[in-house]
Image 1 (tube, rainbow, N blue to C red):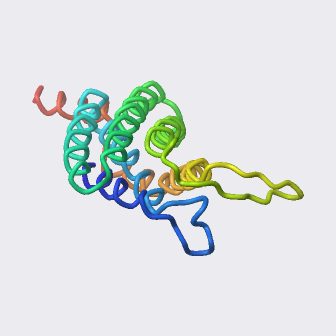
Image 2: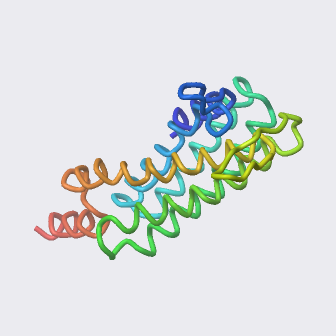
Image 3: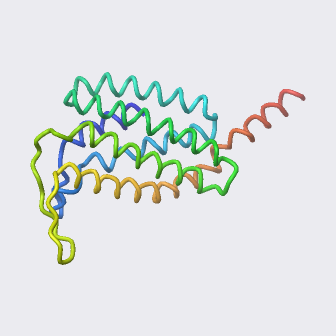
Length: 192
């Protein structure tokens, strides 16, 4: 978890220049969604208490390392956004635990991504003097701060990755039993 957040904190400082997307995307958008995947797998197997522990440890390590390797404003914004978004992810996943297999990881990741994006980009870049970008949408031209374009691009990538991450989540369901099954197996083994 700490490695995912640290990589994201460093990579978010670099615009994604391929395909001319530097005004709407940073490299961090591709690494951060893995944090939701780690949290959801932990929550599935060990439950919300352990998932929160992973979040807290990941938070502490990531913030400490980010202070050394990323700008202080990025580290602070990341810490706040990470903690809020991941704790929301834990609660939502746990509440949806008994629904269709895809619903807990997808809904929790989508809601966590929305919160993370709003908190992170507003704290990290609002008022930072990054300039503006001009976007042509159909026949309309919109001018807005670069960081808003980055937030939008980041969110789109997070949502797409949340969809794609359903594939490995489903595959790992066979290897990582849900909390209830793991407890039932342990209880059965203890009664023998």
